[in-house]
Length: 494
Image (cartoon, rainbow, N blue to C red; front, side, top):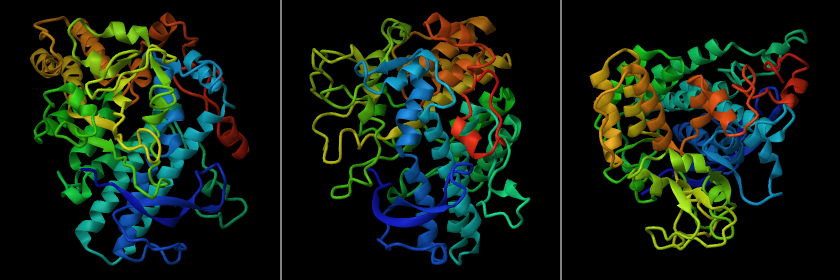
């Protein structure tokens, strides 16, 4: 049963993404299991414990925003990779072809939407972190809420740094400058990539020391210390800090998580928040309040003319990446004309031959607010922790440890274990295993190819126009550079 249900609405004072609007505006957000409180102005808010809870819940709610989890996210992370193409039909959202071909420019609107949405989430987190300490309330709850906000701020910054490199760092709520010659309050320069990662690591370290291991059913879906440690391990993975990755993943491996026996069950509504799940974005149709049922991650990928819009078409290359007998293939790719385990016949004349089965929601699930609004978005699973552990162990020459974790994942998929391999052979096997285990799920494939140093080789082989020393990062949105008056600088090659 899902419990992050956005059932009440309130106006939250939120600064626009820095470098976008430079002023104050109100943004409607939805919250967890709280009583409606009308419209509160900033002076009235951050006074009561309930308002503290609501402010943090707003940060979770923003994870479902279209610009955070739908078109921009899918274009940047998946359509640009070798796992999927644009999909749908010719002419529909044709601008997505620029991501499929890697021919986008700094002026394309989707990039600006993605940038702004991450900073909106960061500003929501900053408001909670800055204002909750002054509220008179239970100290343990206060510390937990601040830790949750730090976890979420780290997540939004991780999205930004992997996409754009160094970005402006904002860890407090910006205020209008007190002096005309002090514009940096609202218009900071880009921090270095290293500084952004340092901030992310600090936030996740702080959060991991405070967050609980579990929650009651009423708070299912909130970040745990396991989620903070797993995300921290992933951040360190992208920094190639192998000893840290090994230590962190081993901590998580001792927390009681386990692989779900049937891989497919991880992506059903009944399988949400199971014992393999470490963190997922909660989504649910709220009868009578469709504004709150705003996750469109599944809808934009559903079979066109049957379940959704039909975008993000899995590539033939991805299909061929699965070994013979790999049970994950059927749970990952939905083929035209097949009948699902839940009894839905995929139409024979669907525009595309393949769709993302992890985004499939059976026809018997309510569509009161649109298709697929009940499908959670999986961000971290225990299988990924095992693969990070395997990769870190291999990079440090710990072959037995590497094989142990790798083979747990392979054997769950119905595959034979790897008995032995050289370090380079095992590295390639682990990278391959990561691709097929996480395909079309959490948006890592493009970033993984970049960190592995294989993006040009792999993507050029798929006919994409990947240019080395350019396309490893996306361009800073031109609108942001213009609004900054040139304070923001562009990435090389754009």
